[in-house]
Image (cartoon, rainbow, N blue to C red; front, side, top):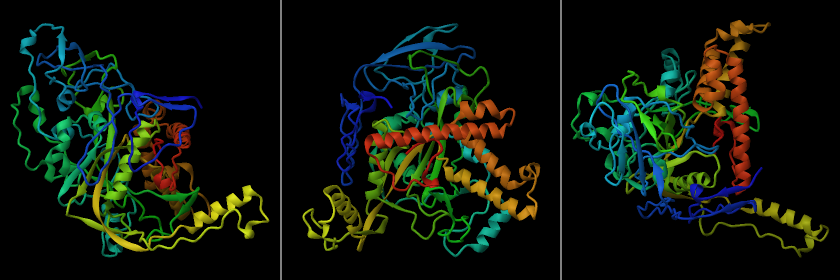
Length: 556
C-alpha cells in the first residue's frame, strides 16, 4: 500500500543459495553496515547483519534493599548493552510498558550484571551504590530454563487416559497412533548424534535473552539438537547464591510436546490421507516444541525503573504482555511423534539450510515470519535417504516459437503454451541419496494454526451429529460437550497468545467467547492479508498454504 524503505533495521543478508530479488520499484534497500549472512554446510560459519552505529541502550541494576528501585541510564557503542527496539507490524515483540520487572525475571536474564564497557550513572536512594550486589555470569542455559513459562501445557489439556488406551489399541506398531482428544501429547525429541552447530542468528539469540557465548556452548548445542535432558546434566553451578537469589535453585520443568491439527486445502476439509481415515492422525509429525519463555523488555528510551520485587510478585506471566514478550521454540526434524505417518521424523541439512535462510531473509525484508534461532547438523552420525535427481534424468524437449505446430497461435499464446509445457516437462526425482540429518530451531510468539481451531470445530460438529438424533441439540447442550470445551479453550488460548489486547483482555473476564472469536477472526484476517501482501512484494511463493500450514498470527 505504501513505499517500504528497508534501512539498517531491516538489512538484507546476502544469500548465497537463495535469491529473493523480486522487490517492486516502490521498495528501496540500503545495506548500510549490514554484514553478509551465508550458511555454509561445510563450514561452521556464523555471520549476521549487525549495526555498529552508536546506540543508546538500557542497563539494569538491582539491589538487595527491600524497597529500593533505581533509574539507570547507559550509553554504549556496542551491542552488548541490553536494549529492545520498539515493536512494529512485523515483529514478535510486544509494545514496551513502564511496568516494573519482577525480581525473579530480572535475575533470570542477568539484568543485574553489567558489561565492563558500559558506563553507568546511578541515582541512589537509602543505600550507597557500593553495596549493590552484582551477579556472576550464570552457566549456559540457566537463564533460559528459568524463563520457562509453558502456557500451552498450563492452559490446555492432554488426551485423557481412556482415549490414550484406546489410541494404543489402534496403533500399528510404529510411533504413529490416532489421537482422539486433547490439545497436545508429551513427547521428547530424538537427539542427533555428534551434533555440530552450523549457524545461528545473533539477532534472535539476543532477543531471546541468551548471551553470545552461550551459542557455542555444549549445553546449547545439545538442547537444540534434541538432547533436552542431557543439556543440563554436566552444568556446574559456580556462582555464589545469596538470600535474594535463593529461588534460582529451583529449576523449572523441561516440557516438550507435539500438537494435533486438521487439514483443509482451498477450504475443503480432508481426512482421506490420514492413516485412520478420520483426521485423528494429523499433527506435528516431526516438529516438537521444546519450551515457551517469557522475556522482559524495556522502554525504548533506555531509561527504566526497576523494582527489586517488594511487591511479592514473582510470577513470570504477570509481565506478559505489557512488559514482556512470549516466545515458543520448536525443533524441526526432531524425530518421530504420534502424528508421524511412516516417515523417519527427520529433516536433512539441505532443507534445513533453506528454512534457516528463508526465515531470516523474510524477516530482514520486512515480511511477517517465524524466525530461525539455530541450525545443528549431525556430523558423521544420523543420515536419511531422500529422493533426488541423477545427471541422466530426462527432460522433455520444448517447442520453439518458430515451431510449425504453433503456427495457428499468436506470439502471446505461444509463450503461454511453451510456459505450460515447461512446467509439465520437469523430471521427477529418479534416485535416492543419503543426506546428513539436521535440526532447525524456529521461533514465534506461538505456532497456533488455523488447523488447530478447525480440528476441534470438526469434533464439535461430529458430536452434534451423533448426539442430536433427528433434532439438533440446543446451544446449551452443545456447550456442555467436552468437544466444545476443547474448542473454546483452544480459541481463548489463540487470543491470549496472539491478540491479547484486542481479543483476550476485553472479553476474558465476562467470558464472552463469541466476542473474542469475532475479534480473533478480524485480527487473523488483517494479519494474514498483510503477510500475503508481503509475499507479493518480495516475490515469495508459498506452495503449501493449507490450514495446517497457516498460523493465526499471520506469519510465514
